[in-house]
Length: 318
Ligand SMILES: [Zn+2]
Image (cartoon, rainbow, N blue to C red; front, side, top):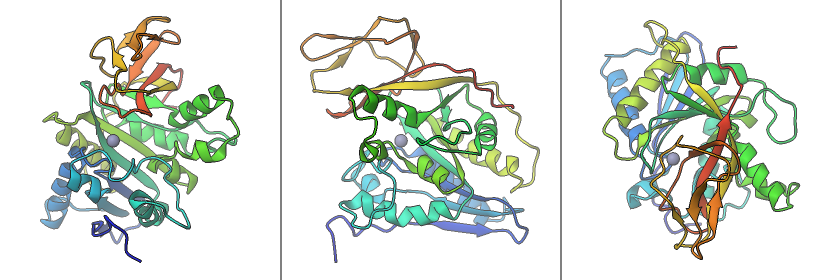
């Protein structure tokens, strides 16, 4: 059966050293308008192909453009956001579901995922990690130390934890805490990776058009390879990032919804401070002292407008 928009081809590049080691997967272009990961992956691939860089152990898979349709359209999404509801489906309903079915087994046969992104508003690069080790129902996990260690060595000033918690919080607020299907909407590549026994870090390399973002992405891959013992060279020095915990996400309801100023990620706000105004003028206040993450003034109605984070006591060097 043929579907519209399925003329795209997913490109994967695999490198395997004879010496066993970790299996690392690097994704670029999960969102079509985010090109830094693609540039970094292509640069690395050229170095490996040209013999200027050697894989000394393990296996490395590079995917320069994880959503080729979105890339061809020059948009964040093809038919929808590839980085939501990221789980295999028996009857894939759209382009991204079919792409997800193709990508899931690729993720599952790796140990570590480095997912390279960029963001819409101004701001410095940051890394995102998942939950702490736990056996709870939301996202059980046992590799938080390794995941935190990778994030700690990617060189950003800030690391953000607990992505899935905000979707659980939103559902709880709506009285739908037990709605497993709605919660599965919050699943991206990283959540799927963890569900398969691996671990994952998303690196947000800067603003979409920041000329430094491809370099940030490239240095992160090189740092990951050295940290994991997959390439020769000195181990990367750990940065000293502050750690924030995501606690909430607010959707944009209508095109008239607007921020009161051009927020950047990690701008601090006080409890009750007005962050935005709804189309009818109703203020949207900060729920507590904390900071704004991923403000997207161009968010489509009924999609994520901004996230809210507070200081975390998590240590990455544990
Ligand atoms: Zn992205």
